[in-house]
Image (cartoon, rainbow, N blue to C red; front, side, top):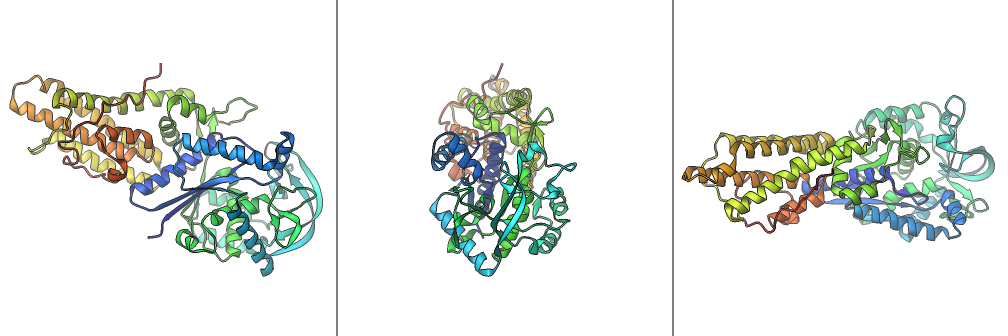
Length: 511
C-alpha cells in the first residue's frame, strides 16, 4: 500500500504563529494520527516559505539579513508545533539546498520545453500578496485595500509561465474529479475564477527590485517569484525525480486555508504539476477561518486569539479538543473564551477527567489496584456498554475518515457520559459494602467493564488528544506504540493488570 502522504501550506516567514496556523497544523496532525491508528504508514510534511519581497523588506527594517529573519521565524513555528504536539515527519524550509536545487531543475525543464518565456509586462502589483493583480480581483471596481494593501502600476521585463493554455484542462479536471477539492462547494469558487480567461503567470522578479529569492538557472539577473518557488516544496521535500518521490506521490491530502485556495493552490499549482506530467493531488482540503463574534480576527480590532497562550495555560490537548469539536472542517467557526471554558469544565473536567479518577480510585479501594478478571457472563447492563462501544467505534472511525471530527468527538463524549451513568447505576461503592458473593462478583465485573471503557476511550482519543490519551493509558502501564490500534472490546486486555500509578488530575477545573 502506498504510504499516506499529507502536506500543509508552508507558513510565511514574515509573520508569527496565529490561530489559523495552529488549527491547520492540528487538523493535519489529527488526520495523520488517525491514519497511524488504523495502521497506515504516514508521511506528514509542513514547513516555512522563506523568500519574497516582504521578507526582504522586514529584514531591512530590523537591520538583519533575510536569512537571520527566516531562522528566527522557523524556530518560532517549530516551537509552536512542538507545543501543540504536532507530529510532522519532515519540516521543509525553502532556503534549504534540497529545495533550491529542485526548483532550479524544474525551472530549467519547463524553460527548455517552451513553457516559460520572456516578455515585457505592465500591470498592477500588490506587495502584500506579492503578485500582479487582474481585473477579476476587483470588488465593486476596486482592489480591496484590506486584502491587497497598496497597489502600484509596474512595467518591466519578466519571465512568464504558460498558465492560460492549461485553463480548459483544469476546468475539465475539476468537473470530472469530485473529490479533488474539499469541501465540494469550494470547487464552484475555483470554477468561477476560471470562467473567464486567465493570464500567464509572472514567475520572476528582476534582481534590481528583489534579490531575496532563488536565482533563475537560465538568467542570473532574475530570481524566482515566491509563489512559484513555494509551491514546489511539496514535491522537493520528497525528492522529486527520485525513488522516494515515486513512493509517496501523489499527495493524499493537501491542507490549506480557504484564503489561499484561489488562485495559488487550485490553479497555479495543479497547472505546474500538469506541465511536469505529474499526477494531481488527490484532495485539496480548504479549511475555514476562526472568527470572533462573526468577524475575522484582526490585530487592529483587538480580537486575536493566541493559540500559544491557550496551550500553555490550559494544555495543548484541551486546545486541540476545542478547535476540533467546534469547527466543522471547511466551514468558518467562532472562537469564544467563554465557550472554551465551558467545554473545558463540562466535557473534559467533569466527564472525561471524572471518569478516569473514579475508575482509578475504585480499583485501588475495592480491588487492591488490580483490574479484576471476569469469569461470569455479562448481564444486560454490561452488554449494553459493549454494544454502545461497538456503535461508538463505528461512528467515530467513520467520522474520522470523513473529516467530521466534531461529530466523532460528540459520539466519543456520549459514550463517556454512558460510562459515567453505568457507574451510577451499578454503584460499586454500595456493592463493596455487601457480604453477598454475587455482589462482590458484580463489583469486580463493574470495575473491569469501566476500566476497559476507559482504555478504549483513551485509545480512540489519541488522534485528537495524544498527550491525554497516553497519560490515561499510562495509568494501566500501557504503551501506546504497542496498544495504539487495539480498539475492539475485550475484558481480557486489562485483566489482572495492576495500576502503574494514581490517576493524574487531567483537567483541573477553571473557576
